[in-house]
Image (cartoon, rainbow, N blue to C red):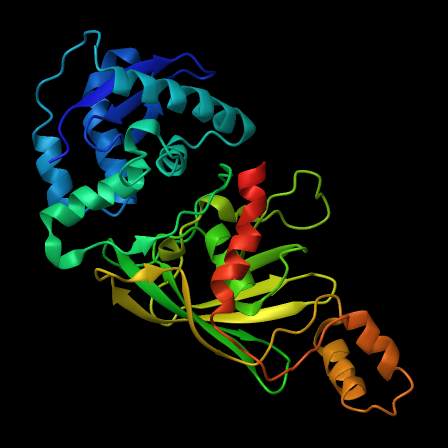
Length: 353
């Protein structure tokens, strides 16, 4: 199904072998040493990355069985050579800056936009999804909006017992805690989204400004943006490389905290796992109630005080608080159409870097 794989040696420290699939341009990084067993280890390395990409086990077995002809020779495929050069350059920067998890590096680099795919799917992971969809039209992949981001690996997450099939969609209900009446959003995200992507979706769905720190907590494990200078708290597992479907399934509960000062706590519930269908676009906000509280208003208790002051024109702080808001504020307002614009605003800095 996937055709030939090409390999090259990368003289990093430690040395690494890079494999690239001719059809999908999917990268696989693996240890070069011991060189004597490299060719024997290639099928297992490819199978592992395909499994992490959500490829069905029967397809992986078929591909592994077909890897019987190995040749060491130069290639004249300029597209492959060019892509290998990109994966070598970008991969080394990410590899040196982080913990050196080659499997996770393979996944992250598969999201990179590469030249030969620019007129099609754009990135190797989406090209892989398209190839799988062509072979199984009854399970078309969702129209996933890719999220830009840097490589941030860390320790492995807790895994769920039965991961969803490739191309699945998670329906999440996210409820803001300690606020009455309830403020909540219902969103759809690709099952393979990284927690850093889920963070952006929550921010866009609620209308937060993404201007404060945040973290996720699942089964007593914290996931967030790693801060090497943070030596007073338990280090978070880096969210940028943790897939949602690796830590959650139907019924799972996830705690999400935004702004450690104000303490906006959210409860995330995985309500459903839906099959992706042609025309389904994710991420999406499909429901919700009430407006997001204003940023920096003092957390849930400060928000309740603010609402009371705004509702009372005779309150001595009414004018001051209204001027501080600098905009009309309706606590009952909610428009799911704001989601797309909010998401673009959150993502914009990533394109400008």
